[in-house]
Structure formats: C-alpha cells, structure tokens
Image (cartoon, rainbow, N blue to C red; front, top):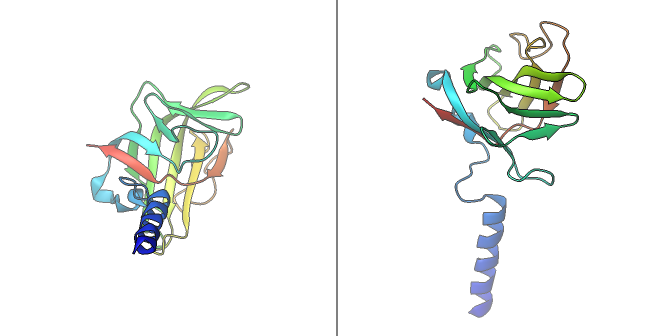
Length: 160
C-alpha cells in the first residue's frame, strides 16, 4: 500500500514540475483577433537559467544576446497580425524597448505566431520598429538593426 501511495505522490510531483499550477504552456494560443487590441500586462516565458522571473513587464526585463527587452513609457499593445490562412494565432506586440550598448534604446516589438493547430510550429520574432515582419509573417519590410527568432512565450497577459 505504501509503495502505491509513494508512486502516486511521485507522479503528482513530476506532473506539477512539468505543468506548474496556474501556468498553461499554451495560454497565449487562446487569444483571438476578437480579444485585440488590448494592453499587455506581462509576457511570460518558460523558466530557464539566467532569468528569474522569466517575464517582461513593467518591472522586469529579459536579455537576448546583447539586447535587453523592456517596457517603455507606453504600455505595450497586442494587435492581431495577419499572415493568411496558414496561421491559427498571430499576435503583434508593440511599444517595447530594446536596448543595446552600441545602438542605445530602440522601439521594438514581438510577433508571436502558431502556424498550425498541433502546437508544434510556434514562432516568436523580436524586431526593432525599422525591421518589422511583412504580412506573410516571414521576411522583413525594411532592412533594420535587429531581427531575431526567440523562444515563444508561454503566456501573453492582456488587460482590456
């Protein structure tokens, strides 16, 4: 009997480690065009070494290589981003600030997209305002300073 209880406790603990309470690993996928535009209160990423907490919000920043991403004076806004029929979810987050010791502070944004419904083709691109993604979700409309793919967030928290 004790082995069964121990086994169940171990399974429950492993489940909690993989799927922490209150965090849906795909929460941003529930956002639909009808929910937008909306203010973004936080962009939450999966926990990993080097960030604690792994969130971009009014008080927390995250680093990507030589760049630090933060909120600026204006609250970030999430808007629907068109990429045609191949997208299930496509969100553009505007009004972020990207800071680099050489370039200084630049307005930047993030595009988060799911390209099919199996959840395996999720993408996130970080770009400066002079280097935005085109309407297809690929490529650039202008050559700019900064454009890179990063791991997608686990949640984009909206405030209407």
